[in-house]
Amino acid sequence: DVVNSHPGLSFLKEAAEFHSRYISTVIQRIFYTVNRSWSGKITCNELRKSNFLQNVALLEEEADINQLTDYFSYEHFYVIYCKFWELDTDHDLYIDRRDLARHNDHAISNRMIERIFSGAVTRGRKAQKDGKISYADFVWFLISEEDKKTPTSIEYWFRCMDLDGDGVLSMYELEYFYEEQCQKLDNMAIEPLPFEDCLCQMLDLVKPQYEGKITLRDLKRCKLTNVFFDTFFNIEKYLDHEQKDQFSMLRDSEGEIQEISDWEKYAAEEYDILVAEEAASDQWNDGYEAELNPVEHQKANVLKYQMEKRPFFEMPSLLAGVELDEYDCEEDFE
Figure: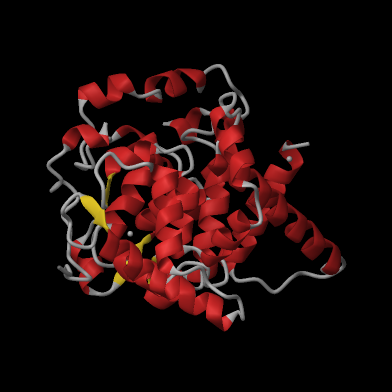
């Protein structure tokens, strides 16, 4: 109904593939934000606690759909879909471990990739059996990867790092993920920080309530969860953090409430890059018809329309399967 009635989405009526992909993306973003229990079913209580109904009301007041960044932004959808399209080489709307590993130039560690495909944070038994994740799973992955400060993203990465599903991150689990980071740094001729030193830094950062283990609640109290998670499985962002003054990062996080989230910043930057690339492509192809497949033609036409509108982690089992609703401490997921 939103697609059919909102003036900012009128162009989707003639772009059938983008129509269905946009709807799928919005649905996943609603569950990502509203379904705090991870049950796959939104309760009345969850709905009341969320801002979803307020956003629905705003649809009648805001003509620019891209201003509704929590759920409905077309630009956010376009960034997510293009990122998935780059990885989904056979375009069957499923990607495997190798595909996902290519995201952001192999920045995510292989051990974390394995955890994502273990079923710790994905649904769909058939896809898991086939060793693939769906486009819907990718929506959750990308938003969690680019904004590690929200409750859902903290839960997402905690589930991935909690290898045995006991609700705490042990020192073994942290070392398990850090080992691969050290290997990557060695390959880059960068001397890695010894695990003991890294551990001290992370414990100082998180300040866990109980010695020797980190709980989900500990991480939700931490102001720099992105630094914690990136240290253990994203080498590129880990190195970026190392170049910054941690005190300044903490000061920024404890200052005024951010006007826009890390996800919104990422999506805006990536959309502008896509726009620039498309403009350059149009200039290069000026004078003749570009040889694109039908989907590429559709992408180009829809993007062109948007361009005209905007002025822009004893030893647990390493791959323990964790049911999405098995955690006992339900209050941690509120």
